[in-house]
Length: 336
Image (cartoon, rainbow, N blue to C red):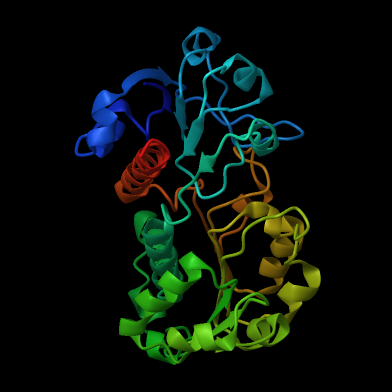
């Protein structure tokens, strides 16, 4: 049996070979590797697929007799599948396979395995880090100190000093896997209350995590920190805009580690200028990477990072391990 594997600078050959080392099925599989170079080679997008890196044309020859295709960021499109005469299964190390033509796979009745859990821990940890950094004004103090400004007396004024984390109301917009892990990580900090808005999750589920189900309007009005954890579907583009930001409390903090398309960035810019929210931590943007300077980068009351919440070794190791297990289980069951 043969597998074509699209590796990159994150999902390396070494990572995959470590993942399959203890799985007996993979000992009988010959793996042919193609490094697509992400993230040194940036994502491409088209009208149907996005966040992908094109494959080299040399893969057309190797894919013809391969039963397995494994990818993380490498493109899987109609042109590639047209050459994949023996392909039986595709594994993708992502929670959402936006780089794969799933309709073309379905037409050929080729199953696709993904890893919904792969970046849960990493993104939740990153969100918590942003939460603490923003609430305790760590970034502002760092910037001032680096400029030679010793502003200790300013931070120790009662009016400017932030409340403790135990007095903070946190609002989670969306309550899927990542938001649930964020709620668990917040428990030791004994925050005052965790609110969540998700029309698809019952209160009973939220109660298990110590979370109160509420409306989006109530969450925005009452939360000191609002963290976005919604999957982008296209229909929910700019779900947070001018109206929603006007509902937020003066002095509040907004965090987005989900997708930039969920936020009206121009509305957020105006809201930050008004001070509602007073600070924003943004890891994802509508256009990535930027061309020129982003409008949010003009502001001092922001913490901007280049879509790195999932940049943890655990993310790719979990992805490689789970995809390898799923593919092995598929063939073992099929040929039992």
